[in-house]
Image 1: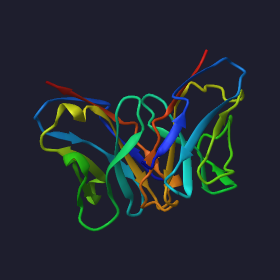
Image 2 (image 1 turned 135 degrees about the vertical axis):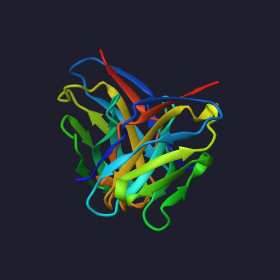
Image 3 (image 1 turned 180 degrees about the vertical axis):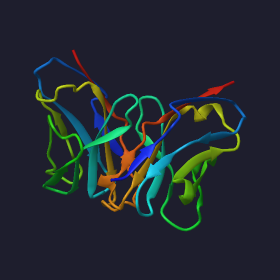
Image 4 (image 1 turned 120 degrees about the vertical axis):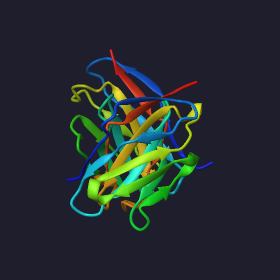
Length: 113
Length: 114
């Protein structure tokens, strides 16, 4: 079965600084990869997803992620963080059916003024 | 606007009581899901349903029950058999079960057992 690891529980960055959130997955075939964002007390919202094709995918709110098969990674990046980006971010890996999706434990992002 | 509505947002329960969390969607999605979220553990799948009158257990179904009598509704009952029910519960839906589909989430229900 597939699994996903988010090594960083909590990250703090200054507003305007660049951001990279790490995600490593384990799956034997080409995975379906997702990044979701959750504001406090809210549900999750999809930022971006990767199934095939170009390994650099663009998402909403200025986020992008790069799929690196050799490193089993799907890191999320943003060139300049805004205070409104403070939230919890979840990486997820799927194997073809949504009921097989596995979520990471999440990375909480704090943005310093 | 289309979306998923969960209620109540906060719920308190005494030990030994069953509680039912509501989930309604007007997205015309076939598939619906219930997840449990605990700090530091991400989301874990409790139950899912792909069509009306059919549902399947997820990874942590023990102590929970569901029904899917209407396409729009997928209520979750947390029974007294659930040993550690205090958690944040999220309902989600997708157009179908295909893994390429986006999951749309409700705003969650926080259950606290007193």
